[in-house]
Amino acid sequence: MALRSLLTRKTLTLGGNPQFIALGLRGLKTFTLPDLPYDYGALEPAISGEIMQLHHQKHHQTYITNYNKALEQLDQAMNKGDASTVVKLQSAIKFNGGGHVNHSIFWNNLAPIHEGGGEPPKGSLGWAIDTHFGSMEALIQKMNAEGAALQGSGWVWLGLDKEFKKLVVETTANQDPLVTKGTSLVPLLGIDVWEHAYYLQYKNVRPDYLKNIWKVLNWKYASEVYEKECP
Image 1 (tube, rainbow, N blue to C red):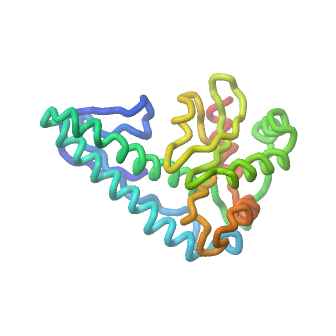
Image 2 (tube, helix red, strand yellow):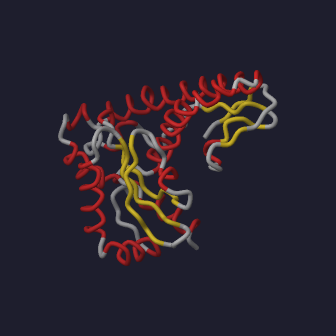
């Protein structure tokens, strides 16, 4: 994630998660929109180029803009010793910061078919999926069912529980990152089930979107994270 520094003197970390280091000792860290590792139209026909462009340039950018604004307000409140405002800003930081964290993972979770998108995982992650879920087909069915059943907006995740060394499927509401379900959880694969991720193409038929997104999921990236976190 790209960073640039602004002047400040204080430090605040939310929940012990490095993704949420808001203020640094040498400067207020603000965030910029990361580049995608592929063209907007590269995931078609599973996800249209129009959706990808809007999702990245508009929705993700909005989370970053509001996150940076909340961080600057937080810095000002901390310098003033305004505890009430510090507390009030936490929901905006969690929502917009979570939106930035989640989308940064999501872009890496996708890959064009000609670059390996949709190819099932091999090696240690493939074995772990068979061990914990029975088969890849069973995992897909479980994630699709939980993603389709999620009320409102949110995410469905394949995660690694580092404490118990097992794979888990979880859902989170709104823009809550997976770590909000447990500090030992590491996201391997996240699917955005907000309507802005699919509505222009799939209308209100979320199950069709969930069915087709597997054609462009980047299991190579998920495997790299798994092998790093669970050697």
